Image 1 (spheres, rainbow, N blue to C red):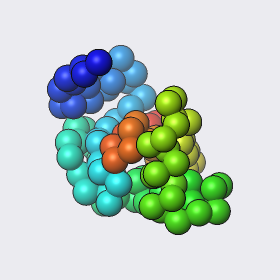
Image 2: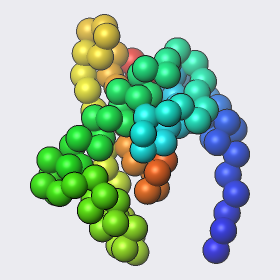
Image 3: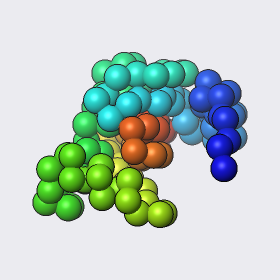
Length: 111
């Protein structure tokens, strides 16, 4: 089943539903920004994606290619999630999660 999702609308909806989210963005597995809204930079998105990939490699003790091959072969992949408290400011957190093989959601959230 293929479902088309407008990523820009998805970011807007996420931010409307949670006032603590001050910025959101989608990035690919290389950290390149696809969409962003609010107070988040391309560097923030790249940082979040890179931290997710590094954590996955640490957790799985495998190469990046092996990690993505494994994730692709699992019917319901485990969502990788990281939270970085005190990101740039004491009251901010960087939150990043893998959505699918090559798509990550990165958010800056007020704590």
